[in-house]
Length: 116
Image (tube, rainbow, N blue to C red; front, top):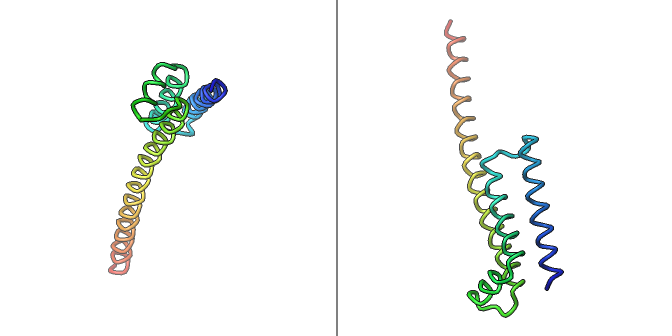
């Protein structure tokens, strides 16, 4: 049990450092880093607080505390991935609309040049 909790602590600390370095180097935007930092912080707190982890395991009906941590980690990351899927979908739709507007403008510009 201690080994799994220590590994989760190291992974969450590593994720926090990686996200902060990525923000510093402008590889990731600040508004997207908040989700990752929140997820990593939640995992860090749970991996270091046995009482909270045991309470969560009882709440979820699990007999083993670290299993609750792993299950929660998967759920948190699924929520983060879903959020990014929504953002990517919005960006794709905006890109399509922008491409269509550029095509219309090019058509109008070509029509103006042919009309002269």
